[in-house]
Amino acid sequence: MDFSSKLLENAVNEMSQLPGIGKRTALRLVLHMLKQPKQQIELLAHSLVELRSEINFCGNCHNLSDSKLCEICASQNRTDRVICVVEDIRDVMAIEATSQYRGHYHVLGGKISPMDGIGPLDLTINSLVEKVKDGRVDELIFALSSTMEGDTTNFYIFKQIEDYQVTTTTIARGISVGDELEYADEVTLGRSIVNRIPFENSLKNN
Image (cartoon, rainbow, N blue to C red; front, side):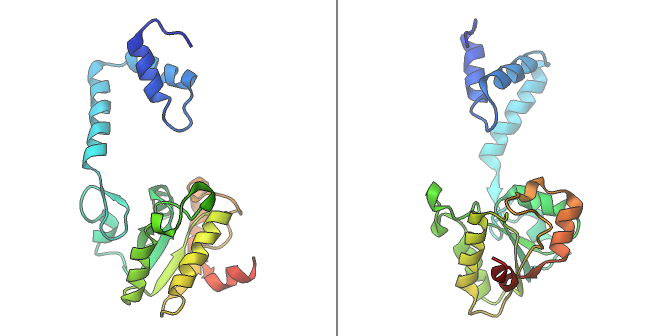
């Protein structure tokens, strides 16, 4: 792709680093931004820089947050005795959109995947296990995607905590095998949370 401007080329190259954005799409986005008022682009640039420099991880659940505790963990209207285990913030947002869950979350930051070089120590599993060991949790809800990596991660956590007094459940399989939570419709995902089943039952079905 030939450019008449080095500035344009640099902007397109940087934009194309984003997931799912190829050079042609990046060029279209950059040209669109050039047509916008300068102030609007400055606001966009400032918000991205501020996001990167100011964003925090919640000290309790590892969700993204503006402060030490995210709004969910800080809320007095939610129970901290039930924890929904998810891969990342997109899953938190998907479940929150259902309005069917009033517990806390624990964001792992990924799934165990030896092929990608991701092991248990690369995730926030240890802090989750510590919560269970301390007796702070009555129920863990496994809400990882029903992929091989998701099932492996669920089973690993289950084995770490099976000797402790905690109920382990998993979302009902209204979510198709292999599907990611963020793509599920709100009604299906909401029903899957409400109709969750004991985790041991899911092991028998595999």
